[in-house]
Image 1: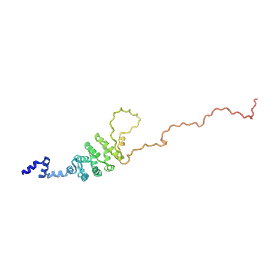
Image 2: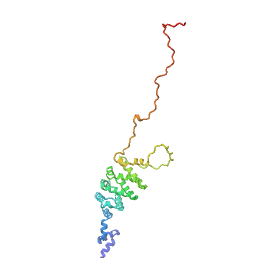
Image 3: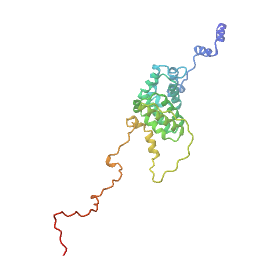
Length: 276
């Protein structure tokens, strides 16, 4: 026994716990408590994530990503997770930088649809913090046009622009801009530097035609039309010739004014009448 005590004292503190667990396994819950833990989807996910994640919370490899996708696609696990489980999934995916692993996740329609359902539920429940977490997760994923259309993520994020929370609205607007740029094959324009405020322009005349804010907003951020191919830049329309404004043409008189001329001289052989 003294030899074992010496070995124990020679171990580092973190190694003592591991050694103690080998000697005396931790007690497992029994009865109703054990059944509750095994049936809790959040506990099942936490237990699985300890095997799926690396030291920096990232998904370790392709087999682990496949298992995570399977968990999310399952209604018993992915469909029953609360905010704690959803945050754990979002943290692990955002910590993953391997493009191949993220592409594999995006190609899973079932996994993406699960994230979309979480986003819809957070928006309907007015849980702004959870909505921002999920929007940041979508911004990290390498989405494609096919993935957006199949999962309806573009439609849901487009609706997130209409919520009252300013932080959520700003995050949704930036995400829609990035996805529209991706769908058109152009990089997203960088944010312009702040400029000094200019004096307010005079109010337009009462008869000036104004554009409704809702119509302008829908035109700027019509992600659904951009994904369906209708969002290409429009060319300026040319009016037909008969609709163009023309300058009035001055009508010329039908006859020119005649100049006053003297009567023609009589012919030399013409008889001149004698005055009586």
